[in-house]
Image 1 (cartoon, rainbow, N blue to C red):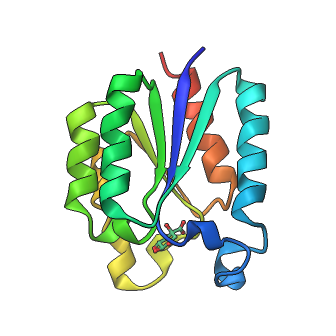
Image 2 (cartoon, rainbow, N blue to C red; image 1 turned 180 degrees about the horizontal axis):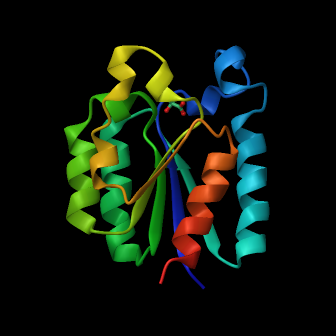
Length: 144
Ligand code: DQA
């Protein structure tokens, strides 16, 4: 059974409260419930990790290497647009990764069009809401 790690960056624990016009009214807990359901549907193990701290996300990606994780779904949130450290961690472990954004970052402010982590990702699911995580998991599970 494939092990998929789902990483969410800063402020995603505030889903449902933060800017619901952009991110919707469902909570982070709701997202975890959906992910558990999709893991059953796809027959994979899913571990979810959320942090507001860049270094903790880097540590978790490094840990994934020793844990034998098969794929990473990552929404680095604001760190997408700033973090070379997260990009380097993804490149270091060479675990297949996909980038997810709930909103369509390409139609928002200019600074959101830059994605460092995305440079180390095989696929990008952007602007699909919570469904983006499902698409990311499905991609990683069904990849050879
Ligand atoms: C986000 C988009 C980012 O620009 C933003 O900083 C977030 C969430 C998204 O999922 O749409 O926190 O990654």
